[in-house]
Length: 401
Ligand SMILES: Cc1ncc(COP(=O)(O)O)c(C=O)c1O
Image (cartoon, rainbow, N blue to C red):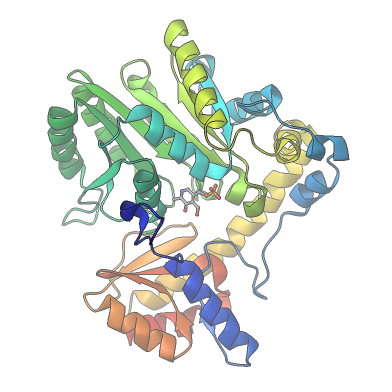
């Protein structure tokens, strides 16, 4: 007699990315020369996790009472305010309307968005290339994922495809929740241009006249934007009060503390009554899932966001990491262009995707040669965040082979 409910009886037992990483690590430990471009964390050129020293110090200096005690259900007020102040440093109107709940990483924020902005059975809308756990999160919440073609023929964001898919969804569901992961989209590495943001917002605003449209910006890689990280917010102004506006904020990459599990869902809701209802719904969701986050983790990140000296030190340490990453991105572009690899405009960020019809077979051949990437249908995800600059040429050769 099996006791699992039938609909959960065939869940994949292991995340395929973690399985590939395990194999790469084992082969490296056995003495093989391996390039492991599967890890979604920033590693230094020696293959060790790059950790911002000031962030590590803030974690060490959290008092034991802070680690031991429960946090408030929706998160410590000082943490929530620090995230709102940080995100909306250049946007006073958004700041005034903001409400937030602490979540375990950006993942928790995505989970709360799905559960509170879609009815069971409804689908979120995202780009055709997307971070796999969007599907897992939707499955777990009995919601679905629908996609629009991400790139048009010119290689830019296919805003017309978004427009059409959104129209169809609104007609069917009466509401839509759009996930856009920008900047440094995982897995393609794409960052939208100002003109693309303007065009997207114009389409969302037009559809918001017909039904409930909510935009969630997944800002997991926000701090590694090669350009001004907050510039895109100005483009979102026309949506304030017209469409739902959500941000999945994460300390994982921002402060190189992935395992601390600190994040937040931030919502901009200008209407007072609706804002209070939003706060209550998000707090209720916290209680109904993880109850509350780690109080110690929230305290450490609050200090990093608000203590002027620590904040400045983090900005400097992060700039060094962004430079490390940029050198790899530059090396990738230099080597990949002459080899005619097909990939989106890549200016920075943890990942890039190389398109290849034979992606699965190619990834297998690369793996045999000791170069690990993550294949999916028609594409290979390359985590440059985990590859030393000196290994980029070998990686590109393998991709082109
Ligand atoms: C696109 C994207 N969104 C969200 C996350 C969430 O990460 P975390 O839950 O660690 O903040 C990740 C992590 O890899 C990601 O790649």
